Length: 284
Length: 260
Image 1 (tube, rainbow over the protein chains, first blue to last red):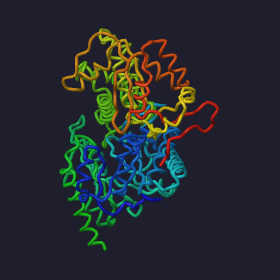
Image 2: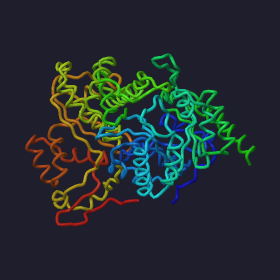
Image 3: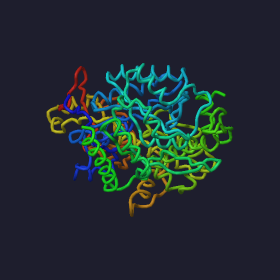
Image 4: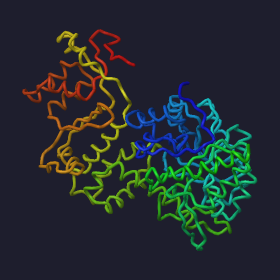
């Protein structure tokens, strides 16, 4: 197909329509773009027209936020067919979704809600991913969540869970470095240990983003995955640490709320691209 | 303790309900505020979506009141689909039943207009007929034809001046509303929604044309007003790129516009 391009081991950003003119004027700070699938399911009009223009310039990655892969309910067939329609048309370089749920009993909650790491969740998630991959006729990437609390009923670690999902479904992984840092801080584990145990050879994409600092009822630090700030130093450090072990991977800067002017986002992309370029030199 | 998604969702949407048991912090203590992060995210992000969707309602009643009311609405009517661009479909009916805005009876129809503008903005792209080809059709044949109209077309009618209310809130120096109902036509000739006030007969004409022949639509419109101007109304449709196909009676395939 005409537009399918592999996402390179370079930096992309999450596309925001307010940046369109700046991006078209000078596309050089980024090598690819990621879109949220649901924003392009309206039917037509300006969103589709913009995407049609952008895909002539950039490889596009498609990131779903509404499939509810971790839901107890069956996948929403209507939504899956809308996704298939979009993916068939766009032919994105990558398609990814979240280890989370957002839909239950016909209600869509517009958040990435957590799942317990149990055998029963595992069965649901694997069957949902298999259904998605069979429908889209392509491999998908699954993103690790940012978590604020844990489930008493969990039977295994997040990494054991993800590893098993990959083995059974044949999907690959989207490693969100900011999410690792958030979960590690909130759940009191060492982020580097998480990376050490993570099946890095299955990672097809990484995410970087900003978070908000809060505190829980006991004044313990509680980080919130707001995507409303720049990437903080410890997350850059963790990114460097990860790349040294994994080698370069396509990496996305996510900034979805309090969206800055393009120059700020382009600056952030430049920082990440420099780290990526250094890694490529070291590991090649 | 084991938490299922029904427990989770019930506690998410009802701030008076206890947190689900079985969610803990890293020391095994009750999750408390950690669960509230999800509660806040869900409600705050849906209120944001409502503010984006209904900017005129927001202006009419003010930020603070809008957010409070939207908070009640989103808990009562969470989205049924992940397509948030269409969220708020039941908001007009909610406004009609919300006693704190009973003295602003026009709000529901203004909300209907805001919903229609979003449907129009996102509607599937279609290719309009070439207006020049109309000259090749005999007038009697044209009058006996039916038409396929663009999915971007929206028609509204209200006992309140919704078009003028929308404009005075969104466009600088727009005229102030006066009492009386208005009929509104929305089209999307390119990528922008175009909104115009039309008369009653034109409204009836276009809405009849969706399912009837041009002649039937014309007859219905002239019953509303004997001054109905057919060529004027037809030009509105051509300018709005609303007509995508002409189907002559007895013809199976119709006269198509050229697809690229």
